Image (tube, rainbow, N blue to C red; front, side):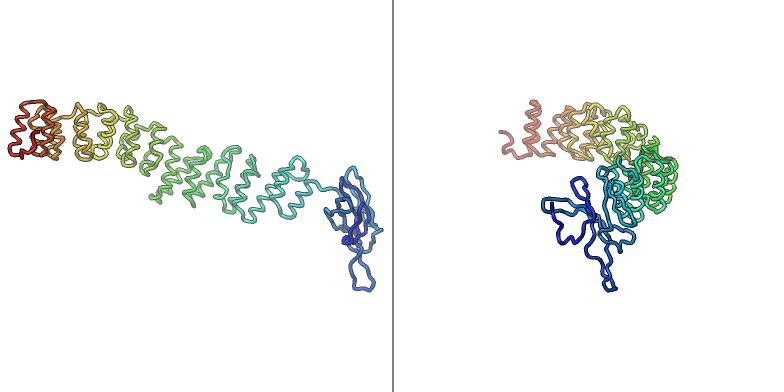
Length: 456
């Protein structure tokens, strides 16, 4: 039991239970003022819900009601009847009967739509989809999309398409037309389904053509991400080639063509494009599709693009790309040839033994430090030619080694004494050879040298 507060300033026309709350039909004690003296104009009655407590109550809701001629009525003109079991409440005036009942989820969604709260309406519908009778998620979603497009929130609308349109091909295609009509295909493109549902091929072609016209980088992203069976590839290739003819410095268009040729299994054309571009996927393309026959005439290009990767590819596939073929291709590029033969020698000194004579000149020109190891480890070096090369270039340690290997120890000693001018090295050399005559030669060569500390 509780008393209404003075602030409520109302009469109670009727009262009924609503679960643990009370439904209260009220009438304001004070009406509206009038220009006519002593004229009383009643306010509209109210339907309120109160949460009762001990000695207090809390107002939960308050709705003003419109009855015909309500200005003329008083408190005793209104009555409240109820069917508690069905939560139905009958508000009775002399001219009207208003039925009040609890709002359901459909009512709530209707109210949200009336207030343009489309996102909330859709969320509520998704949460209570099984309880709805007048609304459904898809229709609400379409209304929400229309609202977003009218408000020019194109990105948000595109992001919601998958959630709203689901797997309905017809809805996707009609929505596509709406985005196309307002020139926003580029916004929709990342969200278009590429299967389940699969849209008509011309839709994907329209999108690709739009990107070809306005955004080449975006076009490349789509070509790489979309399955190649979505559209007519040859039609897109033809348009790309026409565009490229007008802009031959456009490497993005060239890469688009390379990707499409790869999808068509036209690997020769794709490889030629990627080599021209020096594209990072060249080597994976060759390995993946076994394109070794296609690169036998492009070895120089591969080496110029990335020596390390190219040499590894060549050495890993000697059976498919013979050493002889590689050497023939690189003959006019001696520095590249040196790089290849050097790695080949490191892999196995016997593999390229017929080219060791060539390597002598290459090492002498590009990497002298590796010349002596080659001379020491190879059994196929022409010693006389090697000696001539070293004499021409005045490579003295290499001459000493070659003369010694050829059995001309006296000549080797002479180089040490007269050109290297290293007596200690000469002594060590004589010790290594253990040849009495060589010691005599050392003495002969030393006659004109300072004798101090030569022998000890």
